[in-house]
Length: 205
Ligand code: URA
Image (cartoon, rainbow, N blue to C red):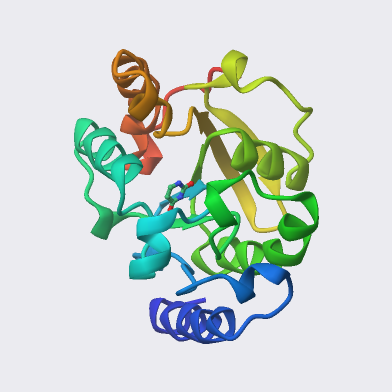
């Protein structure tokens, strides 16, 4: 798929998500939060679900977790314009509760399409929910995020080879400021893929 086709498809998906009623979260949302960034990016990040600020603005990671995420991106020399950023859920769960498995099942068709369209070389999973879903999708044996955070996992997919990099969710640093350094150290796993993805080192896992 060429760049223009990707843009058209991502735009169409955005319109479809905006009118989605596949689960009850549509009843309480202000805006859908489909995702944003470069549809031709080499690196895609997947978070959990929109929070209050994201719901109000229709954009991913614009609250406190977003400030941390920007810091983490900055630590590897990237900006949001250079990546694609989305979530497992496109609507906010009331009171920011955890996504229900029924909501995840209803919503991940959109994420699957985003992965197919953007076709990133590297997928960064932010936190437990994104890591669990992506591991399952690509048949990676389930592992605790604490044992794989910051590791690069090579996989073969129907769209060619990809690398999965699980990291803790940036929100952990909003509860515990000391976690910022840990997150920054895990984010360095993306660095080899930031400028020239062909110069990847051997993967860790
Ligand atoms: N947390 C997420 O997982 N996604 C957002 O967009 C905001 C906070």
